[in-house]
Image (tube, rainbow, N blue to C red; front, side, top):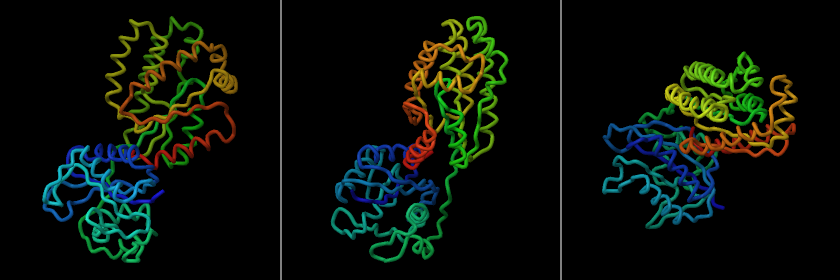
Length: 360
């Protein structure tokens, strides 16, 4: 496998969406993304354009040689709307440069590696220094960190602050959402948002008489969750891990309400949900009914002890159908065969690995 470092950036169209789409195409057509830097907003280099760029650097592992890699990246640029003209520094939707390829020095008609202007550009050096400060430039024989200190480029390069980074853990009753969310928030140095469903006096009544109390319960949950999430998302530029999402309201309502009641509920749901930001990532925990019942028994809430397998299966079905409809939201699905002391630590390793590959 070959190790390469790329710089991605653009200053036309939806800049953040273009970067996200470029990363998806690189992962699909080129190889594995090992790590990504933060995104930086920068002035146009070598141009009088007033359109600021968004840039980041990534490390990839690929089976491609340098020329095949370049040709593939050019195809990705074109797919994302890049139109190449005579002016190399013109505005563009997406530009993907190969900065380094292994420790090789390559110069031919198609490609020059290391990138000939790598050491002159802060918009390259700042994000590259984040992920590869000790890598040496094979020609200049200096580390990226040293090149950044020496760089005379005075165009500003500032970290691009996006909206709150929101991760939601979802799953059936007793799937372990709260325990995982709490530990993940700690590991990511994020704010943990826990649902306070135990305080709802309608919940025990619902389990005794579902038909009578379902509509009132689901409406109260919708209002409670909306208010809680709205408050949690007020602070800007923070990472948040929730043990639920607002979509949970819709999926449980679909399972618990009559068709008529659900139609009324759905209108209220979409009205409120539209005021909340979408999650950057939903993590879904899937396990069998036996594991769910064991966990429900362990946590000891009297009103949950008579939950039937058929009801848990019904909730599972609505979750899976609902998640399929969220095509624009990145998702990680985990099948848990059994719960052990190492379960959450193993899940968090996989989540962290995934987070290195995406921009959230």
